[in-house]
Length: 85
Image (cartoon, rainbow, N blue to C red; front, side):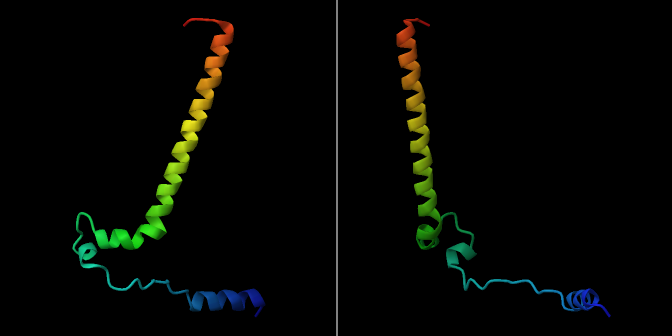
């Protein structure tokens, strides 16, 4: 037997098992599919929601700055040409 046949045979004989993480017991509100689970939200705030909120604020500020800059230079260009639209 060659080495690839041995490796292929061992892979086919022992397929990898799925990894299923253990997250523990869910909160009663989550289990009951409540409309808003405050305890879950506060638990997930530092890992999920706070970074997303910060990113949202940064991207919104960036869009406002870019828009203001474009509008400002467009106004300066229009002022230099003294054109009325």
